[in-house]
Amino acid sequence: MKIAVLPGDGIGPEIVAEAIRVLDALELPYEMESAPVGGAAYEAHGHPLPETTLKLAKDADAVLFGAVGDWKYDRLERSLRPEQAILGLRKSLGLFANFRPAICYEQLVGASSLKPELVSGLDILIIRELTGDIYFGQPRGRRSAPDGHFPGAEEAFDTMRYTRPEIERIAHVAFQAARKRSKRVTSVDKANVLETFQLWKDVVTDVAKEYPDVALDHMYVDNAAMQLVKDPKKFDVVVTGNMFGDILSDEAAMLTGSIGMLPSASLNASSQGLYEPSHGSAPDIAGKGVANPLATILSAAMMLRFSLNQAEAADRIESAVKHVLAQGLRTADIWSEGTTKVGTREMGDAVVAAITKKTITG
Ligand SMILES: NC(=O)C1=CN([C@@H]2O[C@H](COP(=O)(O)OP(=O)(O)OC[C@H]3O[C@@H](n4cnc5c(N)ncnc54)[C@H](O)[C@@H]3O)[C@@H](O)[C@H]2O)C=CC1
Ligand SMILES: CC(C)CC(=O)C(=O)O
Ligand SMILES: [Mg+2]
Image 1 (cartoon, rainbow, N blue to C red):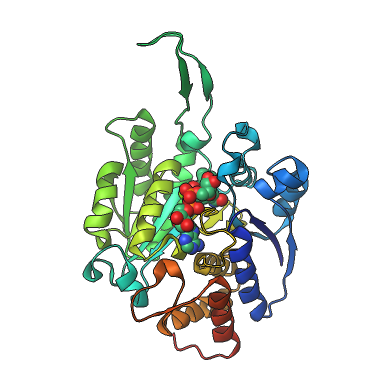
Image 2 (tube, protein in one colour):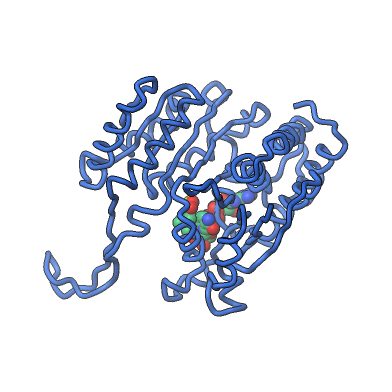
């Protein structure tokens, strides 16, 4: 088993270090190799995704990724910006299916942005298409506007685009996931306005015919954003496009207590995967030792389950996380009165201790 480790920027190296310590505590027979990515790679090699980093990721069974980006690169030419590294990895490895489970752990019900009764027992699976949509569509650019209300004025444009096969394959992923859960899929679109999402809705409806045991409903994205905070438990599997999934998953994170709790798995057709927290590099707290490492640690558990065939080890990590939360340990983002505030490293220590001392109560 070979794991490529790409810590990246900001809090990336801090949280990935804790995930690695947790993986090490499991004493599994894997090999790990690290490489720079994002701003760190730009500084060292002049490119956010050097060929050697890309090759390491392609050759690995799984990639453990931190986060990329920093405000200081905002004015760089787009192809050199750190965020292009994660987009490039997703595209090059064909990681079209992004799983973002928004689970509110019982111990964190009080940390959620919503009332306890709305989030107690919450378990939503957001399935986000990850290699298409407006993040990848061509053409894009800036130019002098050729027409419109202000001809000759500077304008910028991006292209929202999906093909039928792209939508079909993510729809199959969603229906198959729903079969293992409560057999409900909500497809989120903007078909009332966008041609791209009228196609999305038509294709998801067609694919649904192959899954008569799964109930499908459609919801416009603006309504979905509202329903997520009004009555989140009405959702089970949510399938949507790249941009809507990006936005809705950050919103869903707050139902679970913090963006620092939301892991993710990005899979290709051969179950090779990239595992990263759903959040970014958090430059505002980088280097302070306060970032929550649990989303990354839980992403490592998803890696063991989905790409490395180590479901039991994944269960051990997830039980250890529940155990430390039950002990009352909290990083600043999930802290509340009556709990114990700890830093990134202490939280990692506690998860490692729960695994190695076998003190897990679940
Ligand atoms: N996959 C990736 O590498 C991603 C990269 N980014 C990049 O990250 C940089 C920062 O973006 P933002 O919009 O600020 O989003 P962000 O997710 O990095 O941070 C948003 C807020 O959440 C907090 N936060 C995030 N992760 C946390 C954690 N583990 N523990 C405690 N608090 C946490 C941050 O302190 C900040 O207040 C940008 O350059 C952005 O492009 C953003 C999202 C994903
Ligand atoms: C660089 C962004 C597209 C990454 C992001 O915000 C995400 O995947 O959640
Ligand atoms: Mg995002």
